[in-house]
Length: 290
Image (cartoon, rainbow, N blue to C red; front, top):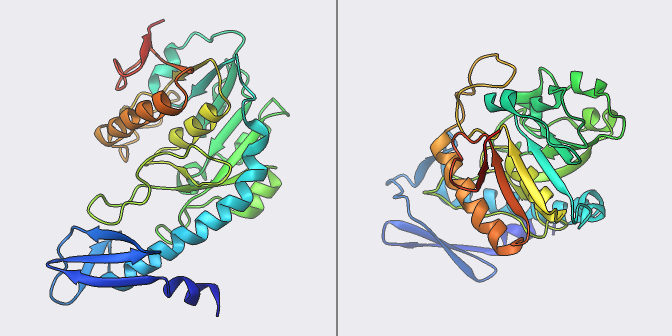
């Protein structure tokens, strides 16, 4: 029996009122959205048979879980506790980055276009949405620090065509790969509900932004402090200009930043998180106005 047929055989689905209830390995999940008389529903902009769609998505999640358990050991195990006693800075690309006065003696991580911020030397780079970074990812290869460690995420190609950074490009850039899952429709089957503690085995969770996988990684390195710079949680654009990031929903992002704070408080209570020149995150973590 091939893998797909094997995975399909572990599901059972039944009706319960206006809802679908399905079981995977004996655990029940309930779909709260009402399904119409034809048994179809909208999800990710497509109409499909609800039962078949649920099975397909869960099969995808299981495949990714297996793949992540193989790849992440090689990608992340070497970084466990590597920043103990150190201060690290996550540098995102919001306009407040222009007001940042670099903090000395820190480990620095860039996400996406913040790699082009030239006032600090970066040690890590996270990118994952190829549609968003395609126009400048090749330019990042010329970064001045030859020891820069790159992490290129593998997003969900079954949801969006062209979302994942090509493997050939990752090889050429000497980038480590990691699997990342986005949030699902909250009225559907929500698998990516929280964040990953055991990043050596589990996919990282993004909730619409690469900063969240970057934070799961930084917390795993167990630093003394994490400074958040340019994490504006707004759609006011980028530090380098070039319009607004209108696809970002600050309200949605703030909800998941709150969840991240709870996650960090639970699993990494000795790591202090500080927002530098905060905008949308003001009052959530400790604030530092420069």
